Length: 382
Image (cartoon, rainbow, N blue to C red; front, side, top):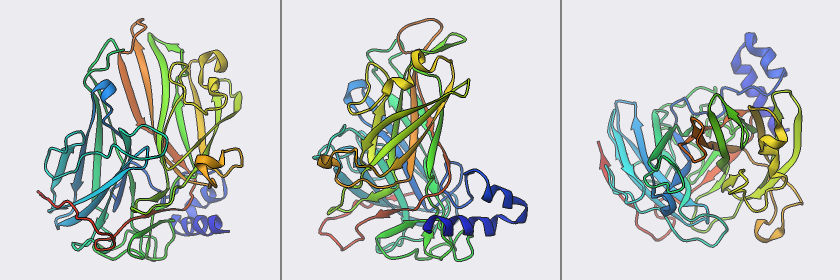
């Protein structure tokens, strides 16, 4: 019933000429987050400062409006350690920094390295959104854009040890009661609770994709001298609790794959929490991934393929550490290790955001200033 309401809103504002889209397949709706628009909320699913490859991530966040804005940001690593910080952006300003040391235009803290849950503590997410100057309320300010550049300075098992790729964050527009972008500086919903529903209620943000789509070359496939060594998926759920006293949100990733001949392959799944990475290759396949060989050329038997992944509730996930799993929207970055020109070692690590379809509601919960006893990091950028 909830889903029907959000789709109905999207159809009304799409116009009569687009009505067929609303009753057909799950096309990307106008009120769903994507990676090409400006927004009030930016989510970067992949932050990497892993020492194994001397990795770092360079962040840029820009203000496309002529007036200033205050931005609240949160790092969360895969083990759920977290730290928050905030800064100002004047009109048309850009703040840039590198995550490993925090150096740059703002006084960014170091990426958190602790935590008690499974995962890599040196990999995780960055979530940033517009707030009032007092950091008491999230506000509409649909002029934020950004990029993340993931760098490896010493990938020792690669023929090319220095590599980098760039991706855009998932961007959420704050909507007004008509479904349009809300006016700048409008308080958006209950303080500390960003509702990602896509609803036209004057207090919500864009919804989340109901599922993600990835086009890829299977592990071991070769096409015109380019061989894929392995594939990975890094992502976050749309059920995000950034508070110090947080609740863990978990889901089961359910995959369906298709090869070029339109043969489908099912039965692949893994249980994850709200910040995750999944390795599909035979050399780094994630523990707990069921039927991971479905990503291999030996199974798919074509040089290109695609997969669909969605977050579902499931009784198959062990209670420890996953508790009760939930249906969840997903935001992802898909990466591939490539050997080029007939080599066997990696020449390039490439990555891009996944593509979304459909709509699911989600949320971002956060501690407003004064709600917990810790100081925030302030720096004017611009």
